Length: 393
Image (cartoon, rainbow, N blue to C red):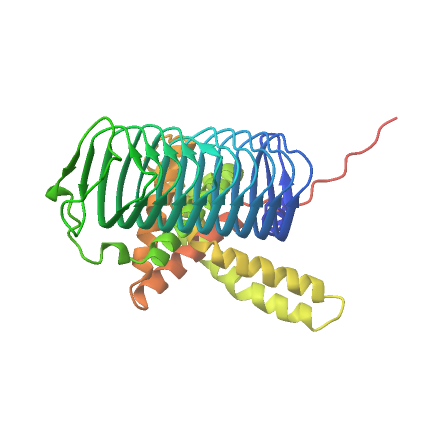
């Protein structure tokens, strides 16, 4: 029973353990230092205190105002990094702004990305609709963009594919530029060789190339005239969705490894029984919620049942994937590690999503698998209360 209660805490409260901490809520603010890894999901997330472990966040609006010592893995709508990052950043978002130094490398996917003037980051690998680089990159800047404006400094080199490229900054290493439109500003400076392609053909780099030469290279031509319309919103949405699916798979496998392993064994031995219990869960839970709503006293219980039921429905494919990976592992005696199980579940998740696209048959198959998976888990939950411990003199 405590596993069911934990799912509730996972979705609307917080859970604290020795190595990590989890926070969930519509509006979540961290105002006290956190000395372990921190996982957060919420509508609006604000970090106003230092995090001394990794930070993993999924949210609508995310504002980080204090130091994060280790890695940051993040997906959100509007994201502001206003605190020092001691290691790498991996981020997918609609609008992303970095306003403080980042010691490690940065990997970004965003509709709009701004790296503020005066700040320094490690290497930058990015893709986005519009990227404005006003700060300094200690490593190499690579990526594909709708529009890239470089006003800062790049220490090692620049390699980009872009619709419109504007250079008003310094590139210390070699540059490979494939762009439909290249604008070389008066402040542009290249301290290495430049290979480039643009629609206009040969381009006058003026005096911007100092210690190398600029070479027009037709092999860099962008073949697809609409390459950048792959669907920025769709691609970013896909990255965000898959990233959150992987995060949830990691959390479920980490926290419920023992129960899910037993559930996988139960499914193998008693699949029909598991199917029956799973069907009962999907039918009985909403009925119980409706009954609870009939009395004033039962309204909170009804709301809780509805919330948990909807949450589990949203997580159904994730749970099926984790149970499936454990079933395959147990069935073949592979003795997979945690990460092997996670990535096997992630691969299964992608396959299930493709299957789910098939009309009727796909959804029917997912429903049956969900019933079996949930039934196997229910059969392995400890519903009995432990007897009280007798006190002795």
